[in-house]
Image 1 (cartoon, rainbow, N blue to C red):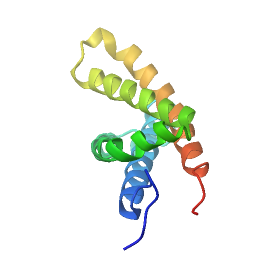
Image 2: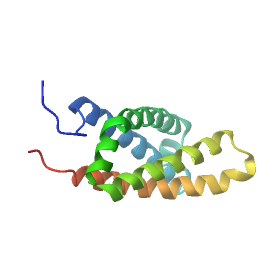
Image 3: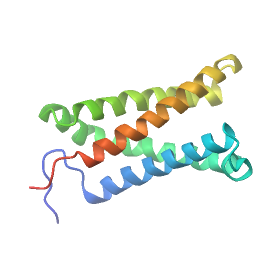
Image 4: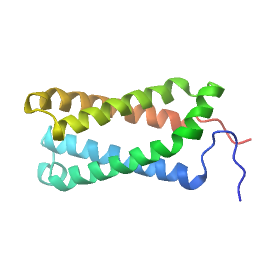
Length: 139
């Protein structure tokens, strides 16, 4: 069994988190491109892509819930990757709220929720990639 540093995720958990967030992000971007910008709308802007996005989002939330007790707590204590980590948590919370408003909120909140969700979703991808590539090297 591999030894892990304080707050370092096991390999399976790291890949589960990266995979679920990547699928969620890529399917969200695909839907945005197809639905909003009408690029390959029949392929990218269809309900199946949106369903993949929603299912991946559910798995991404499970991944975040799994990393909170150790990885996030240890990162806060060690003061490592604070900007990207806290930004991800904040943006993720807003993405969850706006995503739920898109499905369950009043019709008049949909346009604003959609815009906020797309803009923050794209910003989230940047913070997520930055957080992964700037993680401390193995010792």
